[in-house]
Length: 178
Image (cartoon, rainbow, N blue to C red; front, side):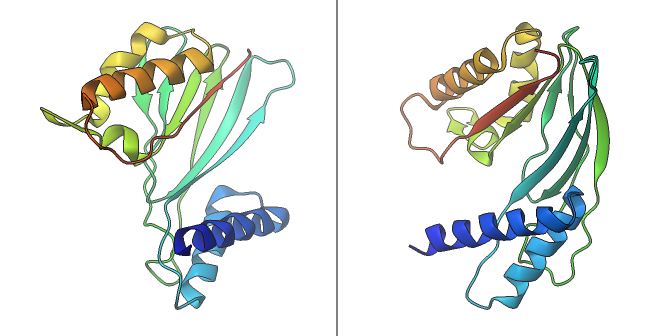
């Protein structure tokens, strides 16, 4: 019940904050203030993203800010893989936290993969799955649909777990110009 209440509070706070200011860093700062003022609410991790597609479909400009959530991975159309360099403390932990944002550009065919820590922290025989393993897997799927990329990652993590218990896993892939 507590987790559901926290999720509902965070979701509503994010929606309200975005109504007044759509900049990801401002949205996270507002959420942090709400959680900080509520003694009973613990912290949450959130990745806030604003995507602005160019009308001609050639690219999309992305602004990212994170509150303790893993940084997204960009799979370039040519097979290059990079992780966005965005960092931030979980919302509700530090009063008056100033969140920083980074900007990046997705070109036609590039995919941005967002994921929860249930992906990179999945534990197998060799320890955590890790972002290095994810980076090694993704070039093969350059140019694939977002659905295929998410399915491939999920399947690889499940195989790595080899039947072990694990945290929840969530993936979202956004491809420019599809």
